[in-house]
Image (cartoon, helix red, strand yellow):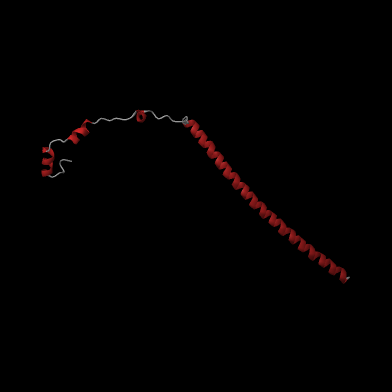
Length: 112
């Protein structure tokens, strides 16, 4: 940094006597309280890598299975509703056809 300063400032900085604040900063030592130096105690037991991966796998499997279950149940409900609709449409078509057949039988009886 001294090489970047202009030569006039460099000579002033070097020729100036050390002040009280400069020597005070040099004499300071690093101090902390006992609280700050105490080890941090974790409140819970750390989970091992094997247990953590097993727990994560099981949790992921349960979530994926639950999502799949709700998806399949929803698809089942939709297909069931469509099937019931088709059954009602077939029933109404059969009733109309039955009505036409009865009407034709009545016409045949009246013509004889």
